[in-house]
Length: 400
View 1 (tube, one colour):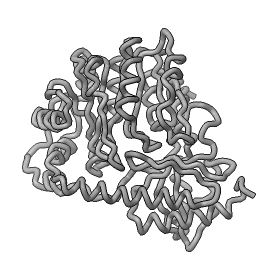
View 2 (spheres, rainbow, N blue to C red):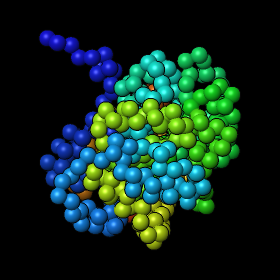
View 3 (cartoon, rainbow, N blue to C red):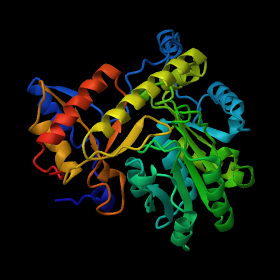
View 4 (cartoon, helix red, strand yellow):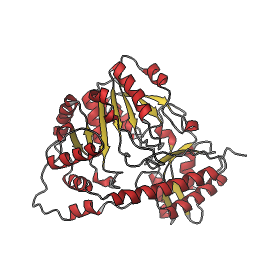
């Protein structure tokens, strides 16, 4: 029988999606499942985006330019310029989601066996992207006790060797909700400059920064502009996950030219997605004000409810719409499966994401979960009530 590739064997199953069969079975039993496991907001996609698709009057859905429609890139450059990021339409590629943007970035700048340092816990699919390209992610562990702040810079320095080519961050962070400060980014910039490293900055949650905190883009690090590669997406900003449109942005023209070769190989990004993405740039400020206030309300309720539960530790996220939560359980993977298979409260249950899938270091996150507070507050209340009951009933509870 023909063999599967080494990469195929190494590729991990999604820690979020491998529980799907248990959730589907719970639904077949008639149970209501509250999905706190995935960053799929129930916020409405802006009408301007939906109208642009509805009003498409073309007779043929054509290939676009491999870099993306020029009209979109020019308009997107204007958006970045409004944030103080001085780029033009030639310094970006439109991609099939932020995922493709990061894969293009890796393919354009890394060779098999190269290493990228990354604070953990981190977005689980980064591991898949690294395996796809044949590179190694080297973790530097952030801890829940200080809200998953950037680990000491000395820890990064200790990991740098002849194979190190870059540092990857997600700011604000998926899965922790931590927001890196300007000071922290400048420390990373100093390391990148000293060792001539790339900084890959995933900034898809830029609009979601709370409590007076503001986002500082890695693209604003003027002294290392040639080292910075920005990854962006419309998925979360406009609650438009299925649009599958992202962007790769860099002042490094050689990186963009190289990434363009990979972009040409896949022909072009989705046409209707670009139509929606371009129109989304006209979303009124009132939309973001409403979304911002909604997420603040959801976050505050969720974090307060979690910290009231016996043995539960939940830091206050500064951004995005996720939090990593420590639970009084022997294994979060077992608990997340058990709560779907064997538990119900008022004929309802909760789907969570085991945090072990967001770490590379073995054993880390074994009693943590990621929670996405993307549901309306009425559902969050019922989900939190159900979770608290489940924690008391769970056979592997670690509290006496």
